Image (cartoon, rainbow, N blue to C red; front, side, top):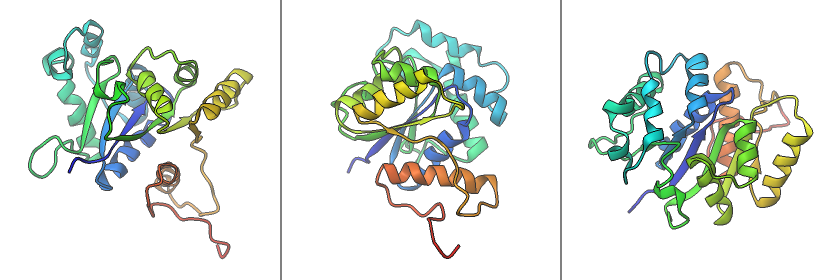
Length: 235
């Protein structure tokens, strides 16, 4: 039986750790994940998490994409695609392969791979998508149906197919344009879920704060979880 799948998109806003923790948690719940990382996100991740150091200039090779499949279009020799998997495994111990060695946990898709299966509403295995963190630029383009890359197109597909789209905007303070775009997305069916931590659960570590947000995203997906302390009046 084919696994149910979710899309996790990491854009160029602070808080990239949320995207990787969500990837980890969805895999733990036995879902398949399509992971997209925008070019600006690679730079943020490098600064925040000390990942993707050295030369990742080859990532620009995807601008010349003309093939039919991700592997054919973006060979590892051209833009170091395998290094993306290696970095994620090294930092978070998240493996794309299952115990039998098959790529059965998650798949990294380039943001310019517009022809990916998740660009179509016919991808029946995909149940929802989270853009976490979501930059104001990405939020604006999604809200206005630009679909200039895979993140924006996949988000558009979620909305048109009436599937769950979770937007986690990471910006403060918010101006009128930000608020208007969030309202447009909310009215179109998206869930606006800012990564704003609570303190009623008395967090004792950064992990507690991160897990609270991941748990709220999982709740929005209607996936049962117990990764954060829920409200209890006896606290």
